[in-house]
Image (cartoon, rainbow, N blue to C red; front, top):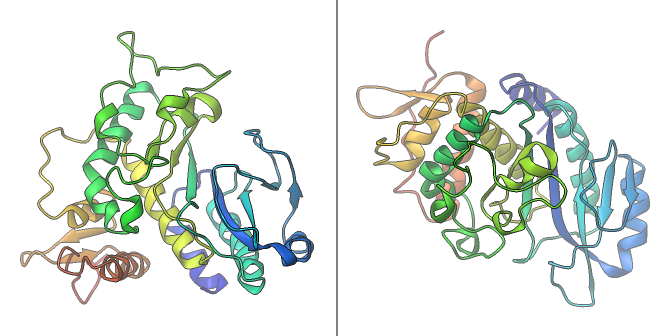
Length: 295
């Protein structure tokens, strides 16, 4: 993706702060040289593992990751950035990662934090509702190891749907210690307790920049969609079809095909369909009309 394409995608997103966490493995003999190269393109600093928000990128060891001694396991965390700036810096980092042969195995994940500073308790509940109703669709965009309840680091939210809000209407937990038992779910609202963010944890680890862009844009669209209440009785006969309509990336014509609302959204919708096809869900993928909606 060139800078023009990134600017186009960023222009259809909400200008809200976003942070990403990349869990990766780097060839051990190349690690120090990788650090030097990465620090030449972004402000990257080595730290001990922590949950402190920074104004710079940080890399830290993560004991939850597994790899042979030939690899160095690392977590690289961005500062909160606006969409276009995040894309520019993440692209520069990914180019370095690929150059040094960095990769991701099944123990690695890619997490996205979206700003939720002004979210009310009701809005947090709506976000949870939407995440649950979208789960089958999002499962089609990730490997089998991160679908349903297959992964203990990103479990299904279905079983905790009604346990997040207390009778007094407050989010469970406290800012000092967070609420760890609610942390390792596809949608992590424990991040709100600690950082006032909403964290989407489901995506597998990756060094592929275009996957990062799509997941960031998609999860932001889902997060901001929670401004409106999601009906409890909404039927998702074709999960992704309905998700793309819900987040306003497309409308539906009389033939049941999706009509993207702009050329930029047409590109994003096609990327969604391509990912579904890649994972064997071509039959479940929404059908896209050959044109975009008229302005």
